[in-house]
Image (cartoon, rainbow, N blue to C red; front, side, top):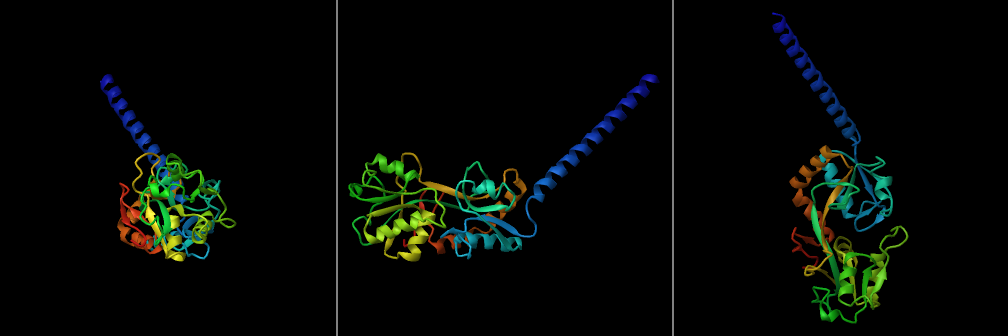
Length: 288
């Protein structure tokens, strides 16, 4: 009888311990979830953005990333609220990580500073030339027609490696990579130089160069660089960036991106962003 009583008591202790552990874990999980979700505003879509980064973002809402933010906010039935900060060193640290906002509309997939959503577009670097010029049929940086030409390039960007490999750096004109767009606009300056004949071609990130050319230079041709086979690659998946650990928020945005892909594409195409598929083949080319 004593042995039976001891066994019964042991079982009760084990049950109580299991119940207590379940309760503690449940409370722990609830607290973690609450702490995570509490960081994301339920009153507005809080967006971190550069105030002077057209064609992507601007304080007057003219950028296509502003329009993407409006679309996301409308699907969430929330207003948009901005924290403005130059897209330069310290951007994520001083905005998203400082809990001043909950989303960055455009961020390259795999960047360790943010937690990436699923990508909403794939785009790549382009070469921009006059439509009626002698470089209008160039599709690769290995094209012999580029030899001896003055080509504009953002210093330190991936296409610069391909230019060096093909002997095009000697006569290239470099433009700054990291700037405060309130005071300096290398892409805008590059296209102005192309129009003035100071350079023969401009190499720019498609989501930047494509819309700028569509808006201001209808006589320019925007050609995605799709034929480079050696590294570094010249096309990238673009996501929305959220804080590390905000997995519930990420999944919510993933669902929104999936369900509204056609509307997202329409905004990008209207802006003039060259769109590629996930293998780097062109889906939409401005003017094409």
